[in-house]
Image (cartoon, rainbow, N blue to C red; front, side, top):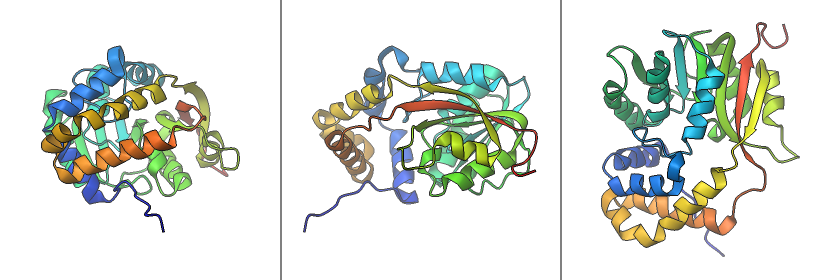
Amino acid sequence: MTETRTVGTAPGDYDAMHHAAQKSPLLHQLWARAMGDEYPPGVEPTSSCSWWLLGHAVSALRLRPGARLVDLGCGRGGPGLWLARALSVRLTGIDFSAAAVEIAARRAGDYVAPGRAEFRQGSFERTGLPDRYADGLLSVDALPFSPDRQAALREAARILAPGGRFVLTAREQPADADSWPTMATAAGFDVEQILDNTEHDGFWRRLFASFPGNAAALRAELGERAGDNLMLEAEISLAKGFPTRPAQLLVLRRRDTDPGA
């Protein structure tokens, strides 16, 4: 029987990776080389967050100074904190990783004034936030990992004020699955815009291809657990290839009425 190897996705695996990313200059150097001119310095993404994505998020969210942005699956906080500073808004980050929340809170002072950003543990389906709490929502390379995407979209609609916008990244669904526009519409959103991210797969191919030649140095900086997970993710992704369906940025707008009203 052939052994099936899978990338670790338990909270402890994410905690290990978030802690390791804080102390690995090489990881961020490889990220920057793979992204090229699209790499946003200071954000230190461990996602596909790029200048292209940040620019479209600024334009799509249309937030006024002092508004509230919620970053769902915030990780170490970089994209949300960058937007909070750029737009002069308040930020709440939600992530299920305790390490991510801790690190993001420490980074906040490099971006915004005290009290302008907070980070909490929670899930996509249960954020713990009040109804209509947010003026805008963000989720970069995160919400598609929800075990119940429809529930995650309903929760997003619940915490977003009517008329508010939700910017998220996802990949177009296969023909036999519910599409993101279909699920979003059922959850209480109108789909304002869908943009193909044509640079997405090329970036990840270049990044993953750079890992094997730097495996020893990455493991030394990241530690065995995070390093092994990273190498395995790269190996599996390059072996399987990338789906032909495009990676996309979606802009959803919360309708004034609740679904079914």
